[in-house]
Image (cartoon, rainbow, N blue to C red; front, side, top):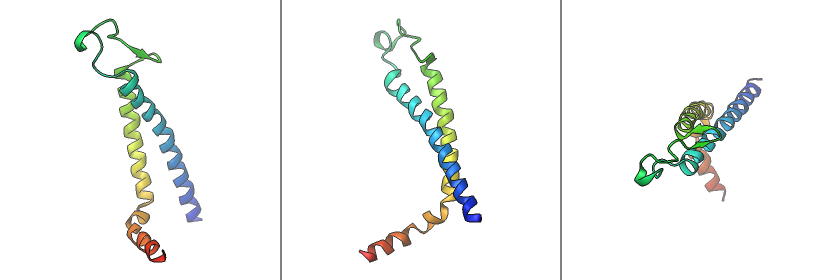
Length: 102
């Protein structure tokens, strides 16, 4: 019963992490490649593209989305590590036993 609850909790945490990873990655791509910093206008100054938008959001709004979802992802991954801590604590034993079997 306890193992079933832990497996369910692991699955929920993993799904939440995946859901948080998608907007983090998307906003990172947007801020890095679609709305990069600098280079707008003459020698980085304000020009016609000063208020560039992607999907109705400015670069700063995309950065805020990236920061918020990135922090939430970080927190969920911390929970994920706590749930798998026993595995991480014993990984050297697992790797050693696999080397001895080969």
